[in-house]
Structure formats: C-alpha cells, structure tokens
Image 1 (cartoon, rainbow over the protein chains, first blue to last red):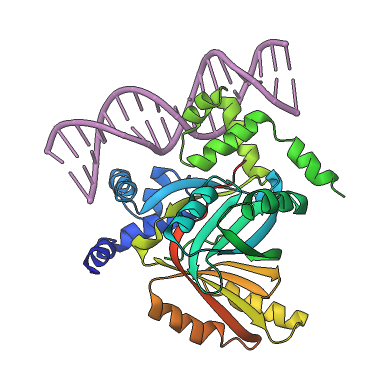
Image 2: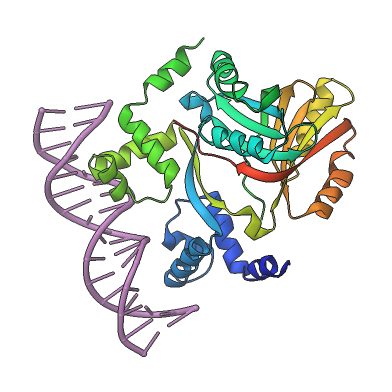
Length: 161
Length: 161
DNA sequence: GATGAAATCCGAGTCAC
DNA sequence: GTGACTCGGATTTCATC
C-alpha cells in the first residue's frame, strides 16, 4: 500500500532534491544559474527540471504577493460546524466554499469542528459581510467560530525538504 | 494614518494588476510572453515587473511542491494555549516555533487559543514525535488541541486580486 | 518620468554523440 | 549525460514624448 509513495520518494536523487529546494527558493532562477548552483550541465539541468514538472513534484510556480499591499491584510481563521453530518451537506458546503476566492484554505478536520477555513480580507467590515452573507448563509452551516489573527508569526512557509 | 496604504494601492494601475495576476498564475513566464499577454513592449514589461519586485508587491517567486510526493502528506492544525499571558511567554514561544521547519503557519489569534499552527509531516508517528518533543515540551505551553485534516478541499489558494 | 525601438549579449532548447 | 550550435529572449541604451 505504501509502495507507490515509497517508489516516488526513492526516485528523488539528491540532485533533484537540490533542484526542488532552489526552485522553491527562487522560482524565476534561470536554467543556466540553476545548473551552475546544482553542479550540472545546463542541458541535464533542463531535462531534470522538466521531469520534476511532468512528474508532478512541482505543481506550479507562483509569485508570492504581499497581502498588505493588495488589500488582503486581514487574516482570519474560522472553524465551521455543519448541522447534519450527511455526505450531501459536506458536498454542498465544499462546492459553495470553492466559489469564494477569499478563502485560501478549507480543510475537513477531525475534532471540534467539521471544517477549518483560512480567509484573507482587507478589513473587519469586509469580513463581517463575508461571514453574514456567505458563510452562515450556507444551508448546512450550524455555527462558526472566528479567530482573528492579531500577529502573523509564520505565514505559508516553504516546505522543508 | 491610512495615507501610505492608500497611496500604495492607488499606485497599482490595471496594467500592474495584470502583471501581478499573470505572475501569480505562472511565475516562470518569460518576459517576452508576459509583455505579449499584458499588451506592452518587452522593455516596459521588464521595467514594471522589476518595480513590482523592488516595491515589495512580489515578495518572492516559489515553486509549489506537491507535499505528498516529498513526505509531507499529512496536514495538521494545532491550537495552542500558553500558561502565562506575559510578553516573555509569547516571545519565547515564537522564537521556538520559528526553529521548527515543519510548521508552515503560526499565528497569534484572538479567541479560545493563543496560537494556531499549521503543520505538515509525513505521517502520524512523526506528528506524535513533534508534538511530544517539541510542542508540549515548550515551557510556556499549557495545552494544545489537535485537528487532523481528513481532506484538503482548498490548500493555499492564490490571492484573488 | 515613462516609453518603445534597436542593439547586444547571453541563455533556452535541441541535436548529435 | 555532455558539448556545441542556433535562435530567441533578457537587458541596456538611447532618442523621444
């Protein structure tokens, strides 16, 4: 049962790990520089990097935008409890959640809540609007608990690999 | 008091927004392609993009690595309560937390917990080790509540801008 | 102060080995 | 996996507005 994952991980050589780390640190590094830093020829580097994309190790390369600078400076976590634990309720909730682009994370969890949400908005009034019109308005939602973030200590750290 | 932020946001023209969106969708797009898609000359595109970096709108460009493929397939949220609400306790906790690379998010929140953590590990035993040896071992921690993620619906969505 | 055309130079991507 | 080759793009300069 673990064979597939083991195989995948074994297929990562230390060179490939190096490429992953460097691309995670600077996704816009040129192939030439990447090759130099990883001690391989540009052609080899090019093919290996390409394979890391094709095999799904790298899902995408994204610019990380400063939330403060684009009106997303307020971070909020919300725990959600649904009123029925039916597959239909969960499905309906997830479908609705995917349509709200301000929701950055949505995870089904075990514990006191059914779902955990991570949300970025510009300010409190905007969150209140979202909360009142979108979140608690969903038919399946029984209650929510809101945790306003007062200080971001670590946000979205890169994977340590 | 809001003048600086207002000024910053006003300084984002619709062309610059377009650049931000496209670089967030594909951080490795070439300057030539970016210029074409944003309807500007390569030279202009180059200078504007450079300024988006210099002015801090783009904090970095990162490859997004598939957590499953590198042994970080288990996602866990942890609420933490400290035993004293002194500045020293908070500071000590934050210093310690920054040294644990498996912690992807750490935020000081208002509500039932003091801190919320988002953690990625390979499997349950690894989390138990982290929890026992690192988290509850910290002097200031009174209690933790763990939420295992059973299904990731949305993880780390790009900012909608 | 910003723009685009042109000019240079270097790297991406390919091929033969 | 390497080395070399070609073409196109990155980056600078400059004239212009």
